[in-house]
Image 1 (cartoon, rainbow, N blue to C red):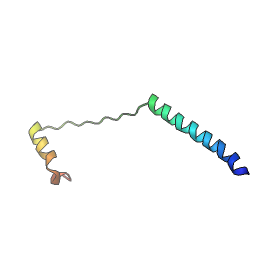
Image 2: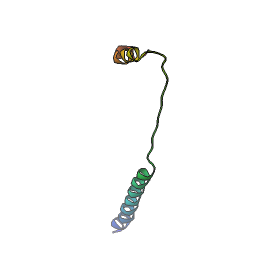
Image 3: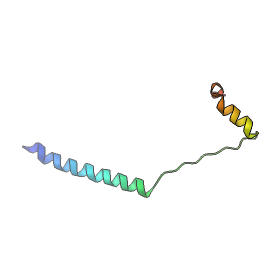
Image 4: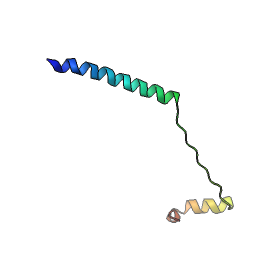
Amino acid sequence: MPFPALLLPLIFWTGIAAVSSWAVSRALPLRADNSIEIDAPVEKVWDFIEETNRVPE
């Protein structure tokens, strides 16, 4: 029965990979920031954002 013997290392290394991935994601959180400056009054900007049919503009 070679199948169970091959399955155990696969399960082991899958667990190691999962724990490693979790540890790296906890140690190195990713963050992205982006901003632009709009030369317009806040009211005009919000009016534009709220008009969903103007999104392609």
